[in-house]
Image (tube, rainbow, N blue to C red; front, top):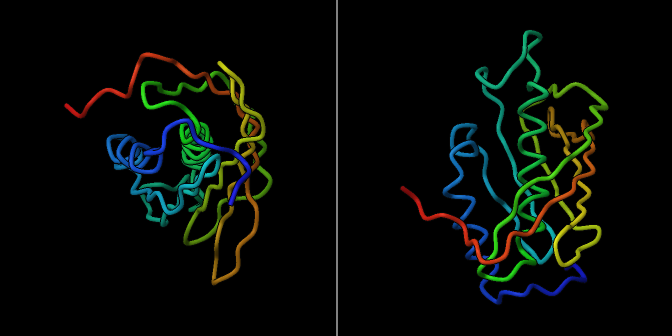
Length: 152
């Protein structure tokens, strides 16, 4: 369990609902597997449509699930009538995404009234062994009075 206290007691349901409406996660086939205050995990099984020319997960796919893991980690701490937008992130690609699955783990490092800083690690699993393949440092903005838009 993390040290952070969410401002919305319904944070988990709100986070899962928002994730379910995020078209890019559906398109990629990503799954939200863990939601705790200030911590989110997203997994993504490999398929050829997610690969670059060498058959590895494309770096853009790796960055996308990392961005969402950090964004939703921050989102878990926000009030019910707030949403999140990424301000910036820096990604280090440390190893090829050569494997059967990616797992992104987003953790809030520091939260503030407007900006939240997240630390994100992305791992690639191959033949039952997992290793880090990317690291993100991310800044997110809390937008109060602007709940996530409903589906439609």
